Image (tube, rainbow, N blue to C red; front, side, top):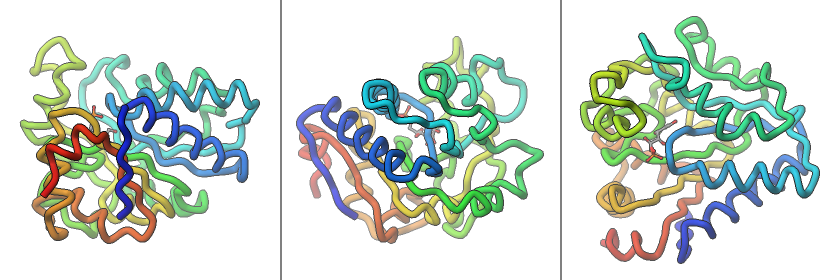
Length: 236
Ligand code: F6R
């Protein structure tokens, strides 16, 4: 696990965006694994800018998002909508090639990823409880795409995107931990004081299902980006 420490969040966003642009330039049919949430927003902005300036086409790129809410949720709160508003609408990506897990695809999502050639690069954030995608603590490391009941901590963390906590869905569908681990390359970005404890556990703990992100230390090609400020607070 390579840890890359930058002084500022914006330096992380630029470096990761450049890397993803290079991957798409080298292989216009790249398969990208994408995350929602606050963490990747600046990365998406930078990718969109660079794609436009450097004239890099995403027309043949396929994307697989990590997760999606289940149950009654307003369209504007869905992760598909989030991705469209924050990323896809700024690119020439073909929306047919933008995939999200859903109940119908449940059993097939992992196969769809395999059929597309596997994920070339997976972008990840981390929950304050160590979740990756919506794999909450004690999710088996060999899990595939599945339905989850969201942790109270996760629902509280995500309540900022809703008008009140009762609107936050109780369930979601998520790539499993083994699905994520099959990606050829993983970039995990850890930002903000609410993630100090998660970063500390990632740096200091042996892989254990009580802390889902700890599995990532077993991946052969993973970079973890964080800021110096956070790293100092989480150092063990
Ligand atoms: C979202 C996802 C989640 C987030 C995590 C961090 O698709 O997979 O695991 O990455 O909850 O969220 P933020 O970035 O909002 O702190």
